[in-house]
Image 1 (spheres, rainbow, N blue to C red):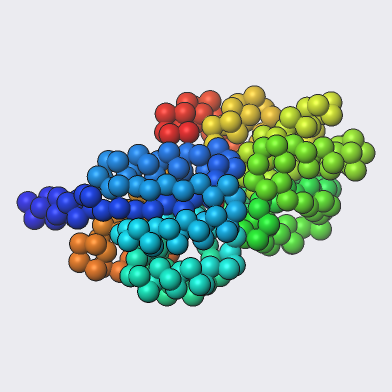
Image 2: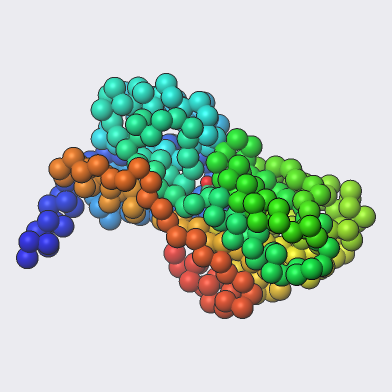
Length: 311
Ligand code: GYE
């Protein structure tokens, strides 16, 4: 059929194309899954993927992009660690006529400097997390502590904004402490320890909002070590949907998470294949879904499913 023919033509267009991936690092379980799925997607499509791990440093990502440009590759995937400072290198890629696709985080630059961006609505994720907590606490006084993601990254900025938007209308709810844990488990634990200490051993904390699951998992350990029951004495809501948070939910130690798909590369390669085939320009933003999961949503089943997904 014509459709089948078109599909095979498009696939043939991707065969042998070379794509550079300027990845942030491996700060979280979600990030590691995104990397694994990108490699898997590239292999399935016959794309030659050149992978660079920037160890969380923007300067390393910029150097990787410059090296991709020098190699004359066919496209660049960029997961930008922070929002600002990309204009020059994106202009260099554009001058070299290499399309750039942003993955999971956004940049402050003009959208004319990249082909498209694949990601979730990060403000909405914060709102979903906030709404869950609003419903969970009702009229009860709730002093909230917040673990922010990497400073200057769009998920940290937008997830904070979304959550604050929702709790703003509720006088019984207040963020009493907020600090970055850089999206890592280790820093999530460390910062939570300082929150607990500052808040009467944790007795004055009603809930934790963490910008990702990994920080929540670190914090859960800190709460346990402080002699409190995570998920009960302190409610826990976070974002990503990694296997370990489902495990924690199954154990009653975490309460809710907003899922983010780690398969950003699938839609990114689809857009590139159409672009390579006949110059089709995708929409500037390809949005992935966000879904709330709680202890009532078969967390053990979700854990098992995710374990089989590349996590
Ligand atoms: O939620 C977090 C990761 O950029 C949206 O980065 C992504 C975030 C993700 O390290 O776990």
